[in-house]
Image (tube, rainbow, N blue to C red):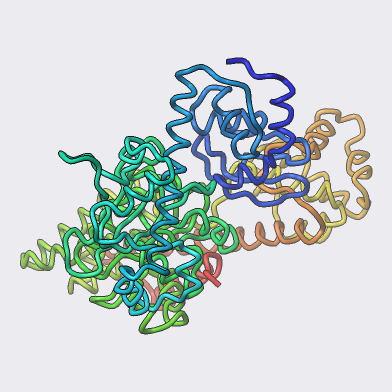
Length: 599
């Protein structure tokens, strides 16, 4: 159904597009823009720009762009009228009547949201005031949750009777067939009855603020321990994450998310100050959840229970998160602990220590250790153990990780390191085909736009050319044209004070001038947008540090190859070279830990 232009104008005028998109995408301010990873295609370098002052978005990677209504259309895969109505409802703007079918679908979802809100309020009231909630109040107190935490997460209690919620919903005019669609009630031979009974109730909110699902936790040893909302018209099981509505803001500040298994684990971490924690909503971790996480953070700390099931879930999650482009680190809880019990008994400082230590337990190391445990448990000979683990290296571990983990594996297997390296070496590198992308952040990665970013900073502030000419060599520029421009700038560094001086340095070379002008366009697709001199210097300093780390990496690989060849041929390697190889590896790891630090 066609909407009036005046209504559309009002919807767009009353919608803060930055706030709207920020509910789905982690955005950072760069100049007048907000920039993040595009939700419409996979990318590692942010090319998605939001212009709040002009009311539109644009992705320079996939080309998608438009206003707030267009964003909802693309994200929710709905037609224009429905997207407009979603935003109208958020802004409390009344619209004209719509088609019967569209009204039915929209009305059904809105009625489910309303039923869920009523149910959440009923459960909260029962926990806080109802006499039947006394046991639940005692349970919450035993779990160490403060009244502020109970209120913040809207915890509640479903009374033990069969029709407490049914009566509440009926009294408020809710159609019980809608309540059944929402998963709140069930239909039986004698009518509708409550689905949740005698359980601590934990509501799940969408990132836009609606109650979409519930988890009901038994207060005793009853099975199942949790009853969770299944798929409904407003909620798809295995797609969302518990507490993401609040954790996404902390994720932007800390540049990381902590993922746990249980609702109460997540709540306990939030109470302890780790407000970037989310939970997997009572389901095995899924590819959809990994993709959702990647919208908000690249670094993910997995903190699953310290038991066999938790280890299996961790291994699966590493693969899924790696495929989504996340760098995964494993939080090692003591045996028998979960995040809730650990933070309650050991405190927030101790948990922060686990997060810091997790930087050394990246995804590949966890997988290798798990494989070694499986092989050792099979009680085969040391030679067979080494062969099996070496085969696992070749099939599953990226070469950069494999190089660092071979000494560790050999030590755990109790075999000679030289021998283990020879077992791994035959297919390493040239035949390696891992499942999905590398599971850790690449060392000193130099994406194709690097040269353009350097030039953009230097054209913005030409005085920096003289300062960085000796520290950044022309070989950094992969594109020959940019390399030539950089050489010209370095040669005339003493003459460059303003951007106009830069253009003058190229005289009649209009191609070079046009390239430089293009770098200054406000809407250019760029990994970095520089707001001031400090931002430009910080970026160039990162480039210099990356180049230094790259040199260390190349020298380490040169020595590593020499040592491997010596192992294979029986030749000698000097102690000086062995020491240099070890020290270089330690320095590279220290640089990585500093770059990825949680503090």
